Image (cartoon, rainbow, N blue to C red; front, top):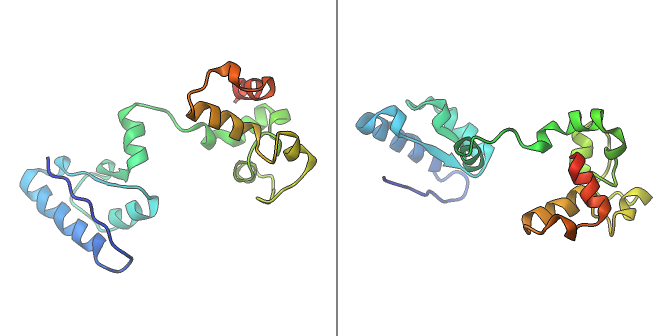
Length: 154
């Protein structure tokens, strides 16, 4: 396997170089044997717009590639609107960060200081508390009962 990593500031020809190499290797090894991964969606869109001779599924973000390899479903955050509809008592600024509140159609500023947000502890939402515990691989009982109850519903 040949692996390249391309770095550089905007306008230095990274995408042009990648497109040239991808076409070259598609000719040598077959188009289904070439894969392009990036950390950002914008870089994937830029490369995909170059009409390369490789399958669209072989051009993706690293996260999308991992999700496919693990056969994982969509991230829960992409279903926040359904969550809010099904559990309106948990679709509050105490529970969800501003970005998710906006995605469900509630306008909340990122610097919100409502009483609901402050109740969860220093402006950290129940969602954020649950994510911290999950990322630390902490046992469920380490979270507060409110965080555990919210996460069970989420």
